Image (tube, rainbow, N blue to C red; front, side, top):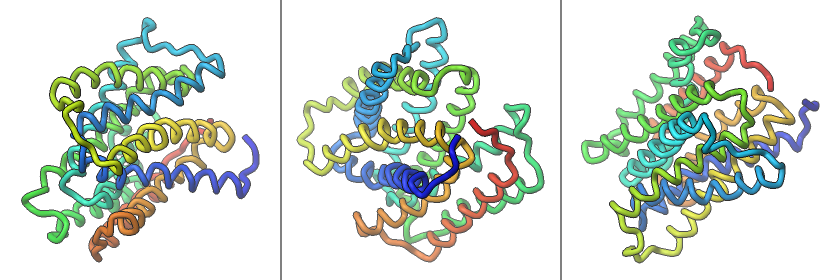
Length: 295
């Protein structure tokens, strides 16, 4: 790895912006498309740049190798289920809420890693981070302006979706000896295979008369927020390591809230700001208490 330069921080900021922009684009996509169709097209379009990268770098894609069942399981748990649940939930809540709820993934990962890994046990520093971070999520539920009895199920669906991201991440440890591009391409392929018949059968997208902004947002979600973002993540990991790349977790919820306000005129209440700050502080303590190996 090289010494961190200004350009590296620029790329990290770009990655955070791309991932944060997914939330308001999901919201816009729901104006015309169902959650299954959004999840399917996001995965399908996201697979294209990753598969092309594997082709040009001559990386073998092992989606149908002897380990196919791991790729299929991770594709379902890490892509299909969370993409669907998030799109379903965002239909009835502001995108900035989704950004904050999704920011809880480092917290959930730390909690689950304690039970399912050997070298990521919870210590005092992590405990403080988990307590502070999750208290911010709980506090968010007291915001009666944005969360009410009509959308509470949608809020929980987004949070559950974030938990599936973490579970999928833990499963990837089973195939951690394989190249990142190969793993990503393989799980995207399986996600496409699983979702295509389901979305076509249940939502019949050919009967839709979609708005242009919804279609553009959906294309953006697939190519940029899914495909290009993963490729940029690979580049940052290769040149700067996991510790540097992990800092993106602080920026995503901040950018998500700001973009929701700027693009969709979403309300930012005082409780949203407090919850956002609390979650970020929690993430800081969790990461401070985690011994992350450089890659």
